[in-house]
Image 1 (cartoon, rainbow, N blue to C red):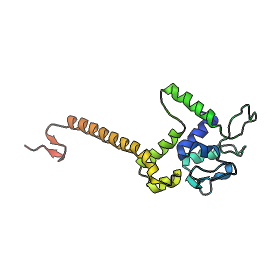
Image 2 (image 1 turned 60 degrees about the vertical axis):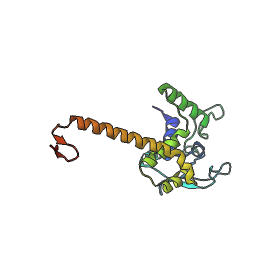
Image 3 (image 1 turned 180 degrees about the vertical axis):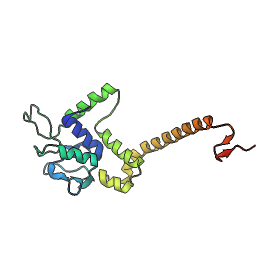
Image 4 (image 1 turned 60 degrees about the horizontal axis):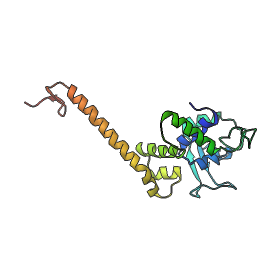
Length: 190
């Protein structure tokens, strides 16, 4: 399992669907526990990809993580010690996080990248019925067409769910008593 800043960064991406650049520039000033949101907003050196500021609701699991993180740095997820920053506490190092993720995924024989967490968040939100307009607001996609990139995954999930249902139905039908009609719930027609 991941530990330290790796775990925190990956968990943040998984729970919010934010882009890695957004996570990298997230500061403690962007955390609003009173309103239970993370605010994605421009900084002097950076602005969000869409240019728009937005608020991402904080899940209960993410809130627990945030409440437990030390506030010893400007950055929400502070980077580890490095040659450039021997004391640690610098900005989240995207390249080191990506290298770490690739090492972990290689051991598992899986493909992936940091943006995969965003795809996964959006896919799960769509599959679980989050209204598209709400999801667009959370993830910062102004154009509904952009979400179409993710809906094919949802379509695959619904197709697999149907195959699973058919397989269970076939198993249940085979194990049912031969004198019962599963559609009528009673005796088979004679």
